[in-house]
Length: 182
Image 1 (cartoon, rainbow, N blue to C red):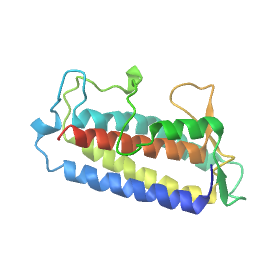
Image 2: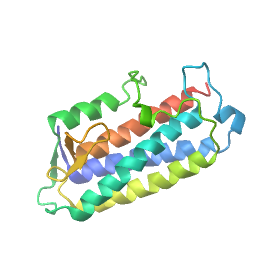
Image 3: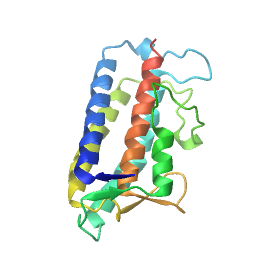
């Protein structure tokens, strides 16, 4: 996949705005409904959001570090996705309103947690940070700048792919959170 940096960042910023607006609406739901589970093996709305917070705890500092310490400025205005990064991003993407079911790593699985509404506030703060990082990344080479991933330190993704993966992952679990209330 190839795309102009600004076009990619604008698309991702729009996606963040949509997710943020939905989570703002979640704050109007009672705590009982926020913690409601359709079955024992399903997550509640707050567990879906806490899962995203746990990913944000890893990726936001990692992205910030790479932006601040990058060696090359944006000398190309075209982002070229890597094979592995594109695969991970596409794996996360919601397609036709459907989510491909996957197992979460244990350290990112908030199942059976009794959570409070502060989870939503934490998520919203992370979204503001993510937006700032996206804007800062306009001055960085999204193809040459690499980030670690949470699963293994053996793989590094291009910054543009990391942003795509993270934001598609957010959309995926916001949809899952909405489905807990249907």
